[in-house]
Image 1 (cartoon, helix red, strand yellow):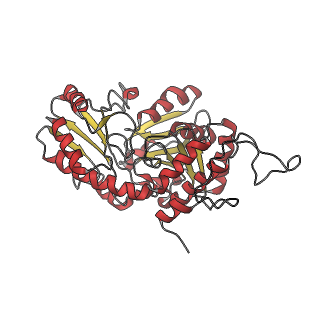
Image 2 (cartoon, helix red, strand yellow; image 1 turned 60 degrees about the horizontal axis):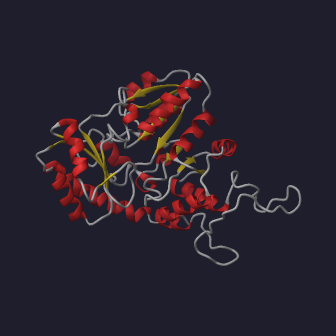
Image 3 (tube, one colour; image 1 turned 30 degrees about the vertical axis):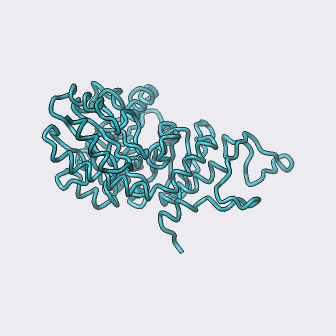
Amino acid sequence: MSNGFETLAIHAGQEPDALTGAVVPPIYATSTYKQDGVGGLRSGYEYSRSANPTRTALEEALAAVEGGARGLAFASGLAAEDTLLRALCRPQDHIIIPNDAYGGTYRLFAKVHERWGLHYDPVPLHDLDAVAAAMTQKTRLVWVETPTNPLLGIADIAALAQLAHDNGALLVVDNTFASPYLQQPLALGADVVVHSTTKYVGGHSDVVGGALVAADAGLGEELAYHQNAMGGVAGPFDAWLTLRGLKTLAVRMDRHCDNAERVVDLLLAHPRVTGVLYPGLAEHPGHEVAAKQMKRFGGMVSFRVAGGEAEAVAVCDRARLFTLGESLGGVESLIEHPGRMTHASAAGSPLEVPADLVRLSVGIETIDDLLADLTQALG
């Protein structure tokens, strides 16, 4: 009997505690474990960098909801990304990345890994011919974000998986924006899924974390070895908070999507908005692909305003219910200016974002209140 998404999110890896019957996994706030004789480990636990029961529960749940063989929880999304790159790549390897990748991911490639001989090319991933042309004999990974941050570009996961595999490369998909509820990259052929669990999976802006989910058990074991060797693991309380958030992911995402669709309607009708970026719009260049591979279109909305950068910043400053802040995916609505905030590290690069762009993370508040706040912020 196969269980649905909501059932897996609530029960996978989360059997009632054998000692007390507690239905919520305990927070195992311990660094080490008593051994039953030298080398006699209880349930395989010896040291909490290597494994911790609270983290194990989260990792099993993440693997279940993504349909993967192995899940791994990290201290942040970038810790997960760094571990993946060092586990799977060697100096002089080549990676294809989105030409509108998340600024922190770009910084990791450009300012950290490039110094150690890892080469990358930003490519418009919606253009399969451009991706094929960028492939080399040293291409190890094709790195996908879909939707992208903050331009909400869409890439065809199944087509890119085929292209990567035909060229001896692996496909990595950052599924943070869509969440496992709206999109299942492993089922479409991806080899590894990356998450900043800080965002929709955690969902309450109270924990920082990351995750990798591997489709193949052998690949998962290789990643797990490097997770332990490098040590950027999720602590037990962080794992517990993230697991709590995962339980309500489905119902939260439905409300995020409902509210985002109403926000998009308002923006489309507003005279001071010059463009709306949302994959749910029929005119969005990636709409057909998004409709094919996503359950719905998500809670992230970006838009451009008349008046350039100064007016985009002013809109952010005038917002009240939409909180001016970085990050995304929490129950509260956020507004930000990517060019000066989350994507400042990409300034002057091929990944620089438009100066008149505003990004919204649409929360789950009463929609009429959100619309009223946006109306007054736009002036």
